[in-house]
Image (tube, rainbow, N blue to C red; front, side, top):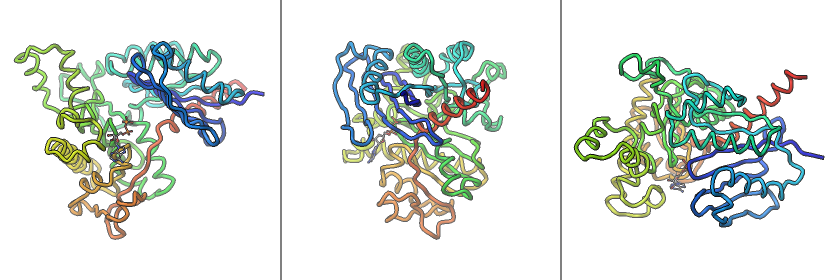
Length: 399
Ligand code: ADP
């Protein structure tokens, strides 16, 4: 007897994350893990559920030379552990859905062709996402493939937040303020609806603070404005990405320093942010414990930009009912949360230090006008739910 399951895949430039879910009313996770360092010195890490040991092992380079290889390695492991499992649907994280895709889509040849056309909008991520889909199509020709977009949650934000003040034709060419981390914002907003419906119906700023970082203003569950724009480079400084910089810096680097565009891209994406400013690391834990001025300056800038963006996003919402933290830094660093929230009583936020120190879900005082919360995000679950919903809709349509 075979057991129908949902597989989710999140293919990054050098990693492939996966999760396996039982198909049921609410997807129940059976396993999760990743292959990292694909094409170099690949490593497999996985958590195979209760009663099973955690797996962490080095792979031969040939076992994960590319995303196809990495997926085969993952599937071998899953077949050994769940011999009766059969993937009925595979859900994929796709960074860019362009102007058109505002909800998850079943991947047809036509959809795949449109997604390929969007690759120039996200050259670092989109080709890898699509390689993940191709690898899954080859491995599971019978399964439904579903694409879930990081841009989709923002697609209905107001026009004033969708445009850049460039000549009009660029808007029509797709040069728009898309916004990213949409799967995370969708999850957090859904959790708020479940645990704090009045807050969900109000004015919320969510700060997704991980290695990638952005913030989103959400009104009654819908995105109004976000800090990321055309690419996932804008807004807050991140692990290695610069966040907002004056575009004039690019002209300077190219014209005065004679750098190529590829070099500038590499600086902006891979050598900037916390790593660039500190000269030490992109990892917040390392910077917090480094205790040297360069690391402190990098943290100062990170905190400063978050506080500045919070003011702008609250203005876009016409006030603030809650600030919600998620992502590796937002969920775990009490020090960063404290520094962000210090002195924000003017906007109605009063942090309860004991609650913050104990990583509680609500970390504001009982007297705080607006609430401060921590909601651990779960992008994989958003993908699994969407994949199962489209599978069920397809089955209902053909029944
Ligand atoms: P990604 O964007 O790659 O999914 P994560 O959401 O996992 O990243 O966040 C990674 C970041 O979270 C790193 O900077 C890491 O240092 C930071 N982080 C994780 N745990 C802690 C902690 N306990 N204290 C401070 N920072 C932490």
